[in-house]
Amino acid sequence: MLHKFLLYSNRLVVTLTMVASISTLSFSQDTPPVDYYQGACKLYGTALRTALHNIIDGHSVISYDGLYTAFPSTDTKPNGKIWDIYSDIPGGTPSYEYTHGVKKCGNYSGEGDCYNREHSWPDSWLGNTNPARSDLFHMYPTDGYVNNRRSNYPFGIVGSATWTSTNGSKVGTNTYPGYASTVFEPIDAYKGDLARSMMYMSVRYYTEDSGFGSSGATSKSNLLTWYANLMYAWHIKDTVSTKEINRNNAIFTFQHNRNPFIDHPEFVAEIWQTDLKPQVVKLIPGVNSLFIDFTRYLDSVAAITVENFACDNGGGNPVAVQWGVENDVSKLLLSFSTLSGGTLYSMQLRNLKALMVC
Image (cartoon, rainbow, N blue to C red; front, top):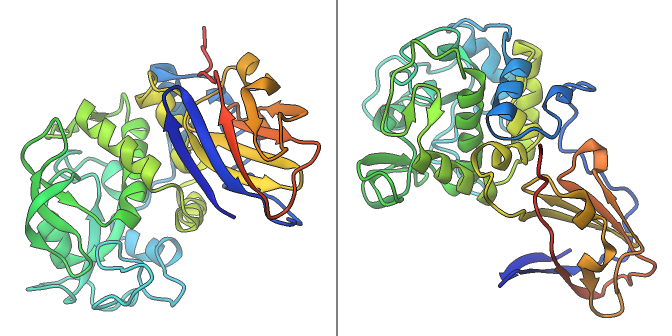
């Protein structure tokens, strides 16, 4: 199936091709415990950040040495090798790979020598405090040399690189507005993963950050505006993957808490981008139906008004709209009387707005 999202003026034009038939559809990205996020329902801003903090707070702590024991469950590629996001080349062959428990650092003089534990939220930012420094949601097994080159630089967008790893990760001066110093830029395939790790840390340690330091990207557990904007952009560009879903589930077995931004990607905008209009993140066409996932909670009146959705090629307006699929008010399910398999439709979404929470 093909789907594109194009914004023209105030109209969102969605292009999709209906498949001939789909036997099953799953709208859920993950399976957190029932009612796990009940306390966060329909909140936004600081209230949502506080509610999520209270939900994921008090996790079972993994020791720093215990990270190496957990990594085989959390960061293993299908071929059994370590899933090193700083050396992996999705769809290609990396210059080197590691086996869990073999070639742990140790000394290194270049890439491929050994692997160690990468604090994606640098240790110096969190003041070497526990339990943050061994929290699996921001800890990754990576090549030691690349980890060292990343140093404690924020993530960013590199213009002219002063150093580039074998998989294309870069160090150089940031070109993203708001910060003009040195940054580390991972490859596109893992930008969303790392963005959601940053957001997790900002929420998990909210109000528990007295030992945290500050950086060019953070003030204690708070993301500075430029960093929050960049992390949101990466979150939208590189959406939640199967890798992240599996990792979230694996970490849950160790720490008994979850990354809410993997389970509910719409929470990101509800905390850090509350002024943005809803944007489409995902479309799933079915037999005479269309599931749409948005970045924001949707106002119910606008969302269930069938005239706000119009398909060409005989699709017309939906006969019904279900608002709040799976108790998530950022998700809609549109039902049509007739959609023909193999037909290309363009849909205009009009007048949709974010839910205003009093």
